[in-house]
Length: 70
Image (cartoon, rainbow, N blue to C red; front, side, top):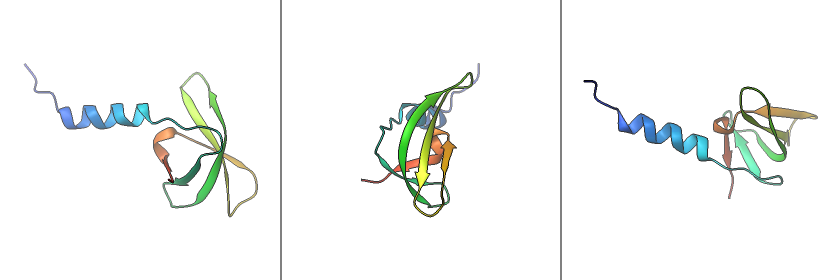
């Protein structure tokens, strides 16, 4: 029988439960600030479209690559 690493299970489920809404302020994994403009889904899963403050255009991110700014 194999032991379950509960630490990794809880982290991955936490990431999957991270919820974003349009208008949320976010920081990317490389600390660029932006705003969520829409949430889309494709055959792989859900992704977040954000407009960054420093670059023109919109960029798609996996939910675990973004952090909400309170």
